Image (cartoon, rainbow, N blue to C red; front, top):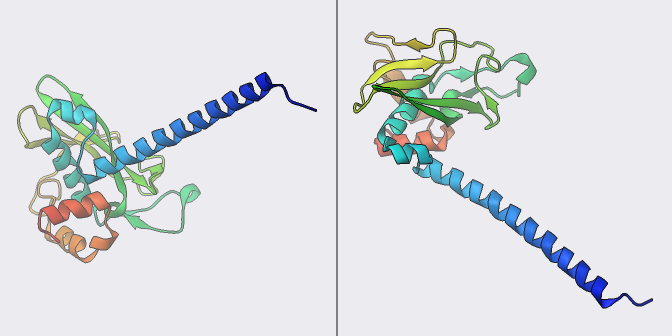
Length: 196
């Protein structure tokens, strides 16, 4: 039985469309991976670039990593993976930026294994976990910390306060002795600051 030429042409055309669609999806996935790795290497989300607040973005991310770097991230029983990680090894993802009349707030979230967001729903011992920082517009001085818990805005002072001075001696020791376990962004930021 001979297959008509027009049917062969339609099958060929259909195959080409499917192949082109698959290639396009693969290219889109590669673009996502490429963009994600660029952010890890030092580029920024477009909103951060367009507002010109890259220094505040870096300061917020660095500070949050320093404050919680050596704290263990312990998940609730239904999410237990058998492996306890420190916050210094987790991914810290940009969430949003809020612009108000005279303040800028930058928010991040820690993610366990790049999937589970570390918050009141996932952490066993949820504490005062800061997820963002507020700044006076035009300044890089921290006005306050932001938490997703009931006490949303806070500040803690004192000579041993990581909120006042995130780079406490125990944080420095932790970074230096655990640099291979640190999140790649955090490790690179510590290298740029000549800590490791």
